[in-house]
Length: 197
Image (tube, rainbow, N blue to C red; front, top):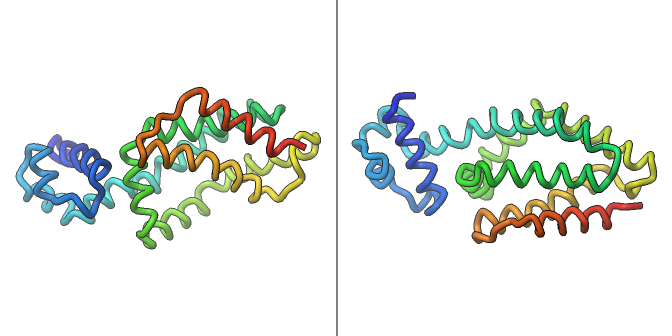
């Protein structure tokens, strides 16, 4: 990308995250990027093209790469104790979101009503993150086999974990509630207690 295109992307991410996609104009983005509005249309065609340039890399690269890093670096080292396993999952996902807060806010807001984006994400997740699902499944099955975890179906267990983590993330992204170490500790302790056998 050229310097102008990078400035446009940075401005668009900031303004979309602050005001939402629907409430943002290309004129406003151009002004914040200190470029002519025509620069947006020459590279991205329109505002939707600019949004796609922001969210498509999240689907194609950011999620698969971070899931791979989590799977390789964290799950394997935290599989022996339920509390450690849950702690690694919770901390890793919250760190990921806080480090990418503006882009994640745009992505989640668009996922809420953009069915094409949801379908694209679902397809990408299913086709490129089987390694993540396999790693999680192995660890959950090990924790159940060693009598540390309730003998529930794995999707139920993951739904419980992601419901709590998702609540923290939504509160952080959309309601400006900080996620403290205390919050993370309570989430991990609560999930460990709920899922212990």
